[in-house]
Image (cartoon, rainbow, N blue to C red):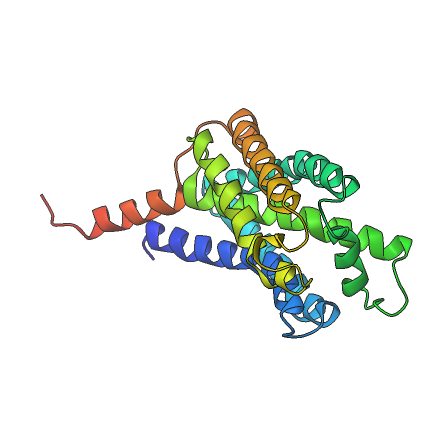
Amino acid sequence: MNPSLKSILLLGIMMLGAAVGPLLFPAAMAGHGSLADMATRFLLPSAAVLGVATALAFWWRFSFARLVTLGGVAGVLATLPLEVVRLLGFHLEYMPGNLPRLMGVLLLDRFALGPSLASDVAGWAYHFWNGACFAILYVLIFGTARRWLAILYGIALGIGFMVSPVVTSLGIGKFGLEYSVGFPITVTLAHVAYGVALGVLNGRIAGQQSSPLWQSFRGLFAARGPAN
């Protein structure tokens, strides 16, 4: 198999594995099933798929294997400043609830019982996993060369969140404006903080690397081009 085609297929599998986790919470809030059930059916298998695909990328010596690993680490670390802003907004009553705690309650199917230490740990772990997954998707699609693009990516994630079923299911309308003007401000600033941190951290720990997806497609098109 053409190496570029092999890398494209592997990148597609990795991006699919990274995309599943962040989609489950909105899907659960939209009424498509319980988060606890979807975690068993989709979250854990997708994490396993991502792990196996990354191991294969190392085995086949693809350069993006290291990038996806470091990108995931950067995503976890970039979630910390996001949480600082979000928690500040929560304590200022700009946010209607503690989302990682809600995630944990839904993950362990404790909605009727309320949060526990185990559900809080599960919720925060899932929240940071999503931060890592969004970062993995970013580095595989865009690379790490343009820090400003990470800020736009963070803003796009924030907008996506504010129009998602997560917000509308809380009964506060699109962008949370029915709850507080501070809601969209807090969410936007939190995701800007994520984007800034992601761009800086990627540059520091992974270096300046171009998009693996684009490089693979370019290699594939070059291989199929007319012979000189």
